[in-house]
Image (tube, rainbow, N blue to C red):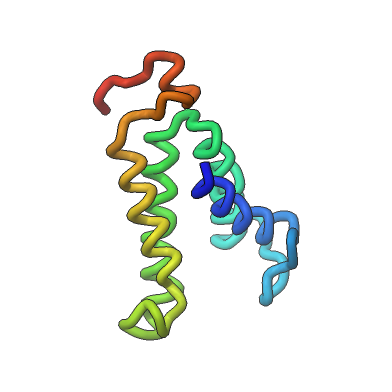
Length: 117
């Protein structure tokens, strides 16, 4: 739940300018950053409620891998220098969520959605 809430904050910043607008200004909705913001906001909300968790987590892991390799890695090989450590962590957390079963309190778990992929 906390991962989803914190991830949503990245989306609200890009899409709604809350809690503060991005340093480079608000992105166009159909730009790469705008689509990423929508994925972060909606995907984070779905992760919070543990609804459609596995497909959403897979898509968000991919988004974070793309974010790292397109925007952070070209700056430096080292994540602490290129600012991409959060992208790497989110990528692997979402992969963990993808491979784990739904939680006991999840919407997916309450529907009996514990089948393999």
